[in-house]
Image (cartoon, rainbow, N blue to C red; front, side):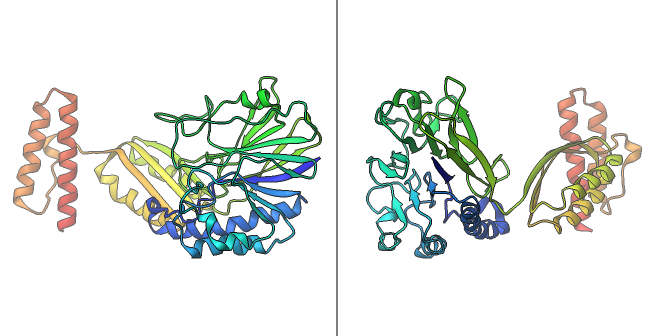
Length: 372
């Protein structure tokens, strides 16, 4: 029997630049969540922790980032750790794992060759990576169908037909390799969402743990590690995702067609107040008269989250198009432009051109408010 924690894609040293001021928070939390992984390992009394690649963002990470990881590992000297280099921290010239500090951690094993490693009843079959990018796969595990023991393949790449990406797959992996070689389980890294995949017999024998801490709004099922238990050779693996991420993320879309919906939007946002990171994607049409109320609502909710971002590229402001609805914009020239634009809308038959003119009036109104 073997029981272990599977994790991957910590990518310590990542900048998180797309998160603005919240990037520093995410970087700190990625360190803190490593501690949670080891707490879970102790709670579940596992035999070892396995990291399926990309512990670091690249091989040029700072000594400070390396020390932060090693400090956590050293708090658990009786818990063996097996680390597979991925494509971000691949083996080769200048590899981060060549630094002296890694040789001093006695309970850490860097899987830097293809040699199998026996751990109790289990045998690990590692396939470390030696380059940052490759569209070719080499997952020639040994044929272990007739060999005793629980055989676990460990690799880093993309399951063919199971992930959606543009262009070539990075390090493609054929799901059929586990049956061809007789593996009991294949532990994978590279993709940031946890997922479990079945062999041709419908047995779950392949899994991604995903990243331990979510890094962007588009990621789903991130912030987990996996607890894996295999009772004997040929047995069905028991795979359980365990939450280890510390930040709560949410993203939702909202379509608006009138100012009367603003109170409803405010209520929905309040329901998400406990999320650290919240993204709102607004679309539809809203009267320019209601723009300030929307701004007030969003400004308040910005104070409730570590990161609150709104995407309004698909939101269009509208204005009454008849001449009698023209405002006094506080400037004779702007007033004349407003009247002229409204006249053009009345005379324009093409709805697309009308939309452009309406947007121009909206911009004119905002310009007048900024100048007042």
